[in-house]
Image 1 (cartoon, rainbow over the protein chains, first blue to last red):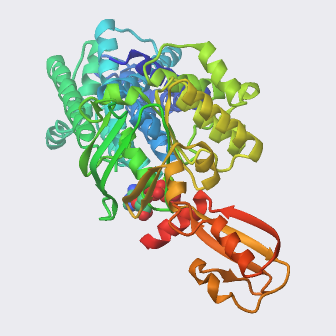
Image 2: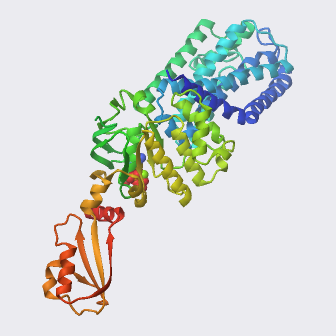
Image 3: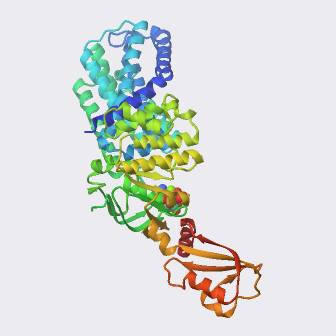
Length: 253
Length: 308
Ligand SMILES: Nc1ncnc2c1ncn2[C@@H]1O[C@H](COP(=O)(O)OP(=O)(O)OP(=O)(O)O)[C@@H](O)[C@H]1O
Ligand SMILES: [Mg+2]
């Protein structure tokens, strides 16, 4: 193991985070606050409780997940895309580091950042709604698993992308819709039966459901299923990353 | 002695179908300074990139100090430092930060003393806290050298290290390269400044259109291919070269005031002493004479032209 290299990459990425601290922390906090104002206060006041929880509190886990997913993907994809774009990736290809070490360092840094972000949003939420967290350890586990999985997804996108548009395409066209339709703002029970079935093909449903369960003990699908699905997504992402490195796909000519 | 780099039967075909390297065989000796010369697009950077692990070979193998660059990549790569041709750097990192990063990447524990020495050797010490984006082009070039030296490589590749570096600093860099060599580092450099190769290299390889067309000791090369010319400034202009001097195949300058004798250093032609003797016999007097020797540049140009 080239521990020094992993530490160097991790530190480098975290330094980048610190340099862009304002935009990376402030903007999600602001947009989350806006969601609270609009959905929680304005609309929420007209919606009765969802499964015994005030609407404002009900949407907190979904909002955190929304930020977690988009930020994990954005951080990780940018982190690996940028060296490709500027050409500094030559040093990474030159160095005596294994692909596993590269992935762990980049994904670790991206996930760290989005977990910190998730916790900041959680803290922000407590300013708006009374919160209780029934299973704090599970909450952290889901947070971490999701951050890592979607940082892996981001990493893959960063390697695949050969322009800035593509870098934004996947988050915009796939992730955001999936998250909005994944039960961030409603319980799946509220949908007509047909759409309930369709929803079950949306991976994000399982993440949000499991995460919400760790807060309130209520879930759209059982926690075991949520956990299993999260791990399955992670395994798929890992397999894709392994394939990319094995073939040198878009990294080496 | 085992070569420090052994390239055998190396070929590269890019995805575009372009064959950039064709069956390259090349051994680099431990501790030498090797200059790789060739026109634009010859394949110098491609060859270096494959040895360093940035580009995949299509065919063939490379061993670095006996370590296969694919199977045993960690051992092979940790010996190598590369200064790339393109000026690719981060923008917002500090000079110190990026050099320390390179050292870490190569698996070496932090060593501020070494980094300080490298930065001082490259006249970058006063810039150590500056952001990279604020450096000039020549400074960035030196920064790339500092990054390559940060992990104390035993083999250093310099892909056009002095492009865009001013004359004085160029001399300083040559000095640095010599001191690295004195410390046992093997150096492979490419350059378009032939005087640089002539000044520094012990061996020269010429690559053209993806093929190595020559590898030779520099001195040997100059001896073999180097031409000498003796120019005699005559006291009285001549109308024609006297027939009794026909063996020497002399040229008469257009103003008829100079006789030019071209000979190679192998010494297969009649000696200068014999020529001067014969001139004397023919009654030709001269007021001055001078000799010139072709440079590596002339040799290189003629080689590559032949290959075209
Ligand atoms: N990624 C690539 N895809 C296709 N062709 C390439 C690629 N990289 C280089 N080539 C081609 O391979 C050939 C060799 O390029 P290379 O960069 O090795 O030349 P070089 O000898 O370093 O030239 P220079 O003196 O200009 O630096 C060139 O014809 C170049 O166009
Ligand atoms: Mg080149």
